[in-house]
Image (cartoon, rainbow, N blue to C red; front, top):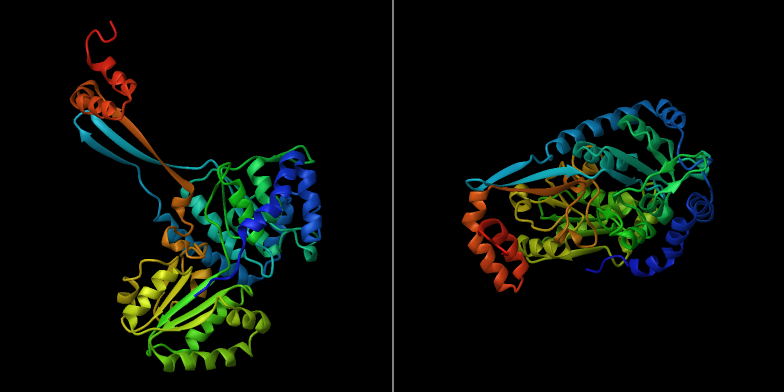
Length: 422
């Protein structure tokens, strides 16, 4: 089950000159690379507040209502993720407190290529706000069709979320701008951030990889993926529609059906042919579904199917089987799991309340999707009084000796041994 070819290492070498140019020349470099790569340079790098508010005023009423509901549901889920500080009494007089503090400033990347993603504004901003991040900057590529500004739907979503710092910059140059910070022609500046989150194309991913360390990142996003584990109780029309829904993102999108039922596999393939012919992005979808990254996998049974989907570790995994929740609770590796006939991936993309910024390319084996925790750092605060230190001192001194670090032991002796050093 190969995945889409994605050579981030090669892309990293190609974007290194962009990163260096932005670091050395700042705003001029950002504008020049935008013109060269996006075909347009924005009237100004920072989007004026009146442009953001005008986008909201002009937003279709149905879309505005839908975004409002998406935000409301996302806040419900993400507000419940906020960790509380915990103090543990290790011994009388000795405590360790774990504090959870947000990063001070984050850059949130919102794509703007084949499709427009106001939903990604919601998925980036809501958990950052729930975490208590005090400074947010959104970046999204300039669009030739909109005078060099980001898509109005993206700007409108920013307005609805109260985000005022928005930049018309995309690609590797956007990540570099966020990481290094730049002075703007109007005398203001884009201050450096501590963390960059959000999906983008391979060059955005390469820039995040190259600058990791200077900044934190959420993940290296690859092409989107859906895997469906289904038995003969599944509706072929539902399964086909869900495979198509993710395939329309990109020609490299992966759509995988895992099933023990040859009859279901045949019925889904027939439904795919029927439904693709009726959909808008038929050519793009066909390329994705016939690519090496997409497949129908026949397995011996659901136990075998669970082994397959755990090995694959899909970004999105649907369970359309009998006792779907019980089957879902046995899955170990997935970015998000969608249970039963009425929880399709597209629900999670917009209005389930869950986050759609998820690990791809098998990284769900070791990484999580974007959440409030992505924007928090745990800091231990250690407090011991004299008696508590005296009680544990022999153990610390013994371990320091075992590691041949006598200075560590001496730092204890100086506090518990009378006349130390005399």
